[in-house]
Length: 110
Image (cartoon, rainbow, N blue to C red; front, side, top):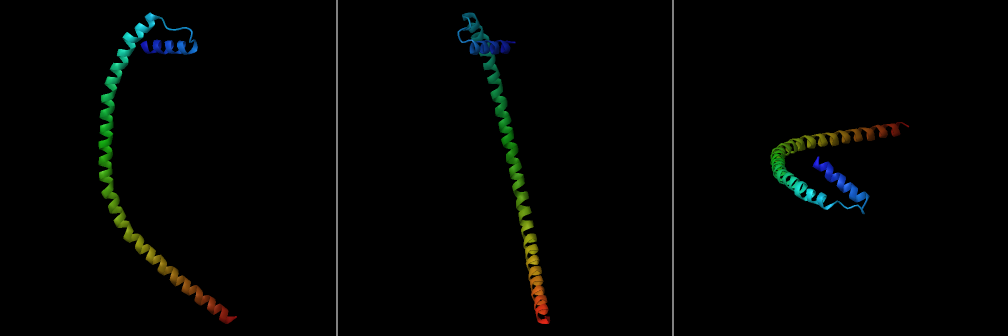
């Protein structure tokens, strides 16, 4: 309710700058709204600090866990890809030699 009142007073001040809140309105705002927001901020800061510390710890664990896994995957994948590349290169050499021989045979027969 107090939040709605503060919002209403803010909007009224923005829409009609000539209409200033009364001294009583300002006293109510200072005496009630400020302490409420101070309590909210004081309550929220530790909660966010705990959340941030928890998230940092979780991400540190995930990174520490993921690094060895990816290192193993990379070490395993590299030799496999090297074998695949060597096999592919050898196959292309064979195909290229076969194609050259076929073209030579075709040229010789014409």
